[in-house]
Length: 396
Image 1 (cartoon, rainbow, N blue to C red):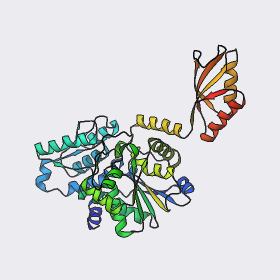
Image 2 (image 1 turned 60 degrees about the vertical axis):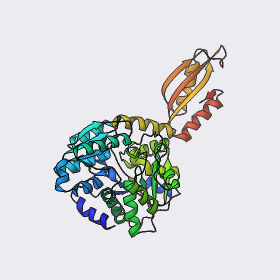
Image 3 (image 1 turned 180 degrees about the horizontal axis):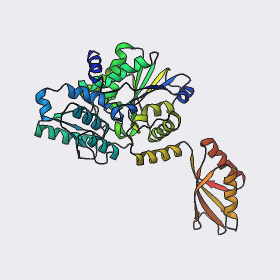
Image 4 (image 1 turned 135 degrees about the horizontal axis):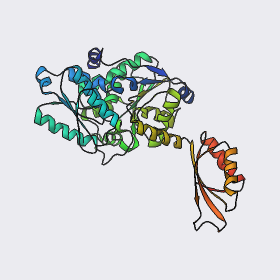
């Protein structure tokens, strides 16, 4: 706790005190107050500047002369680049291939040299360690160092001050640096507060590691949430999570999409998939968590192309897009009659395609594939029911 308090003094003037915003729509779902800790509005677009600045500021003059090196999918990279440049230190960052373009460009703009290496963060970390051994640069680990954890823990102090009655805190979790720091800070002052780590199902290393009693690497990972796609917890973060965190839960890609879309629509917050993980857990089971609850929005650095894809995926997951195959008579006016029914149901037609050759069709039938825009799942079900009531054979 003393390390975290000291870190708060260190980052003053560099990291900002991010807002705590009440979410009325989440509060209504949960049956009690829900607040959003908006680390997506932090400098560099995520919480990472907290730990990176603390770690780099504590280097000796000799260490600073050799520069620093890091491995990151983007958020830690930007934190390291800004912290190093602010302190007059050269920085090099290794990124996995396919890292989001905005994160790469921002990292370069903050002053770092960027090198792409490997498919996963772990691959980039191997290259960063080799670079450190070759050049003498200090490796700034993305999560597994006491200074990093202390810096991230300053967010926990802010949560307690901004939401003094909080009972549950949900934290997006990859390697565990943010979760470890927040949990240590909160449990030291408020041991009654429940701290939950949230991981993407396709990159959830903590559950097996906690069951085993030691960090266990994942054989593979697949998730859109690159910010929390970490294949193995660190030794330091694993111990802190084991000792101070109440539970780890996982969320699906569909849940992440729905949460990101809901945050854009309802909270007017742009977040990356990793930053939406805590809200995804809330949407999966809104009444599970004791309120007042704080959901941490850990980052907002998202590629606009990915944002578009995720929004479309989220719309589909929320029932806002409806895909149907409808069998109609192959007669003049058959398609017009079908589209009239769709129109009167209030759905909007996005795409139409005909299929005349199929073993399931009679000679006088046509199958029409429809992509429709609806107002949500209840409306989508009403569209299905209307078509079936009018005698159409409807498939999905």
